[in-house]
Image 1: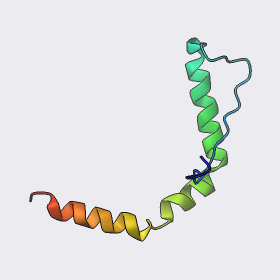
Image 2: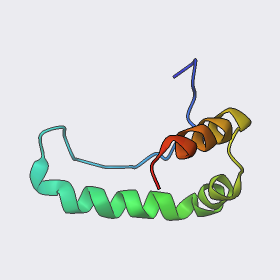
Image 3: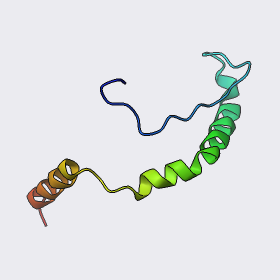
Image 4: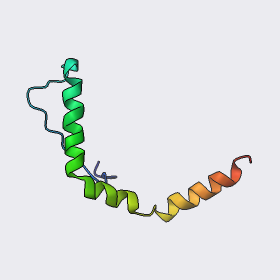
Length: 68
């Protein structure tokens, strides 16, 4: 992660849920949605950010090679 850090980290707080508590999935999903909502402005900023030029260049070249 040092070489390519994520743009945003969302910490999901789960109390009393272990690695193998698969019956707690619904609680984990609810906690994840709550954590994401708390970071919603930052998530929206990421969506509105333009892609790096190297990605844009790669995408254009790829699209040119596609049929149709």
